[in-house]
Image (cartoon, rainbow, N blue to C red):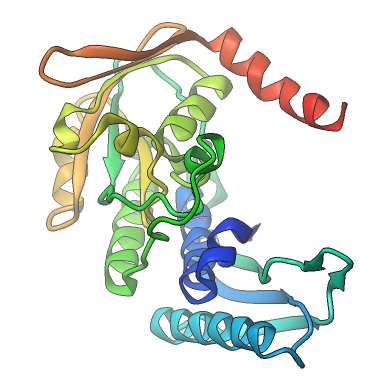
Length: 286
């Protein structure tokens, strides 16, 4: 079994319907990233006072989004909990339908982890990156409000998951990680922190601002490390699905380029990435 739990309250605060759909999308991405097929889901629905029209509206929209995703993906809700009236002197909590996902692994020996494994292996981005920055970590860091909350396409999610799981079960993929909070930049950093470095170029992602490429939190995306000489087989499995070759596993630094002049946007040793990642909670908590 594979088990995961997710929700993004920042998406939910802007749009409970799209935020709920995104939570199920992320559940599926997490499970597929290790080679597990989503089997069922559970929930813990945390909301404010439903006697207030706005709070009831949030509950309605969120459950509508969850139901659409469950039906479309043929995933049963096997368990659930509802916690209402979560309000204090400063108001209600953000609508927070925490979702748990359970996946089935056919052979645990074929599962993959998220750390970059072997120098020279190719790095691919699976899925389409859009200008969807609403609720993103980037907008929070820049103190920007609003924006477009990431959408979810059930058909694209299903096809992408099936292709990814097939490639993992076939032994083509060495590591994989879903793109979620913090976007592609954080995904690459987390994969480097656990293993080797990487050198990537974002130019092939198309005509889009570099900060959108790095920090968009569009759904239904993964970064996959593909074994040497297996690229053609990998690309054939993903025929008809958006796939972008970014670069390769290399060295002990994370290096990211973009633009016609190949401007270097990130060039950091893994040790610095690990230090920043490991010290964040302590800084927040004091």
